[in-house]
Length: 509
Image 1: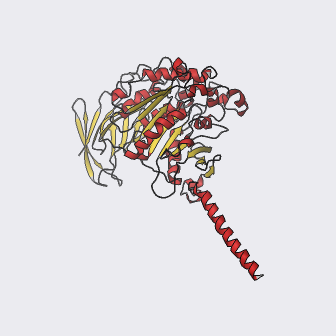
Image 2: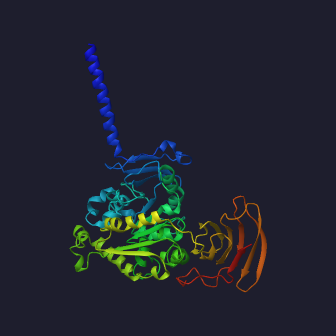
Image 3: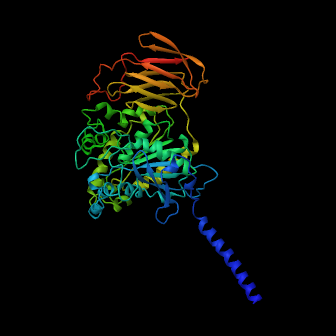
């Protein structure tokens, strides 16, 4: 009995050791799983859940209750090979999906819509479908960063025509069946998703460690994210996105007809021209001039050129059996060619690529061959903060390069900030209304400084301003009444600045 007991004990110990070894070996191939229970506030109150998506342990679903969206939302997370919860922090690429048509977002329609790639992408669960076609997981060994894709519930996409901007209550009647609800999607990204990802994962939270990419409508959004938030990203990649949705005579009717800006509460191009121009990438190109933020622009060719018929992606999704995706990508290719020099002529570092393929048919190729190496390079080299910058926007409450601005005026209009020093010592404001601003925190707290305001007619005034406890100067500037140019019409010169009757130059001493 004693011999048997000893043998049993030895067998048990060996079995335990082997079992432990096998368990450890199996776990060795899996990335470290973040601890949701350790999240600080306010995230702990959001019902955050992290679960494996499918069979790949490096692909997760991050689900939480969004206070801004007032619903539970699913977001896909692709981890890189070697990801760990200690050591170096990892950069993050955020991917924004394209249009999902509300009337088609019905699972019962899936068998019919799957016959054309475009119909499949804009149908039920399109956010997840459009994420899948990039095949992010296939590049986990090469991509030295996380990929986070918001709004990937396979049953329903929330951001249908949102273009990833902040909406406002819509005063127009719904143009069914295409009308989607307005959503604060820009705020969702910057105030909820990004902070949560940076708190939950071992992820970087600096500009040099963050990039944005998007497809189709999300490609427009990727341009806009880079231009509206040039101080937040190291790279912006637009896949089959439009640079101009306001002035292009071919594509504007489609943009207006589907209702992108209207659904977000910004009316029509005729009635709300300043709002439209203020959310049109081509009108915001100047925000990237002189900024260390490279851009990728890509397009397919619709698989219509004879030389493309035998290309792998055209054999996979032929234009003849994917007429919607083929025709749609031809329109994007038209604008891609039209704006071949728009960014480069302004000195912006733009990489341009075009592969054979229908709409979405070559996204995996763009990601593998172009986005991955560009993002790796951008994250490795870091970014430079500009000594001076220019910035224009119609948004009335915004932050950029350490400044905060609140603009109070009767009607929408561009505010132009030109020759602004990153240290907060000087800038020029063009526009109308009253501007309340906070400078960057480069001043001594509670110390008094002299602010000199000079108009174009040479008149100047001086006032004393005390820095707050954060070392920022609160400055109020009255730019006067609106410009003589009627900014409620479509007569706004697209590329020209919109100066007020008396631009104000500020210097701090």
